[in-house]
Length: 155
Image 1 (cartoon, rainbow, N blue to C red):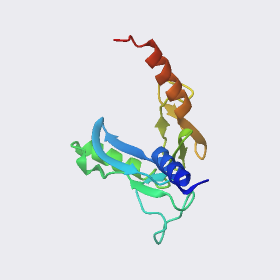
Image 2: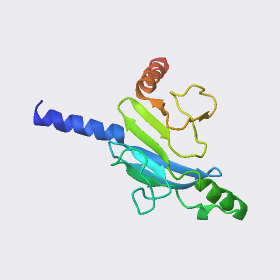
Image 3: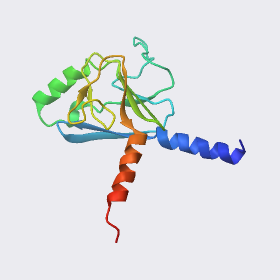
Image 4: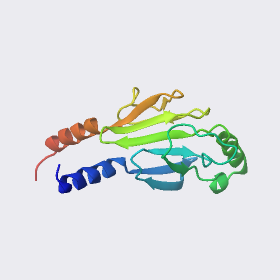
């Protein structure tokens, strides 16, 4: 492989590993993060590897922290959200590649997902703990995009 080919492959790899993660509390956007780590990222509340914490999952993942509950206007909802945070210690792993987006729930709290590659497309799907699930299939997306392009009226 020539040096130029290596650069192109590297750029494509980085492009497929980039994710924009949006956090919504009560339907309101409270935070956003962009990650480009090829190994993926961990959605969590705390920094793994600090004294008194255990590391779950592979090292080298970029840490994306849940935003604090302070932005929630209702005191009751803030308390409920903070209580929920206690069940998210181990976090959720996300990985994006040329094949799609994969998620793995490590935490005790229930986590639901939706996407074009999940079993029940019309509703959120519960993630089982320690199971890797593909939530987005890149090939399926491009096939749908191509079909839509063919069906579009020409001007």
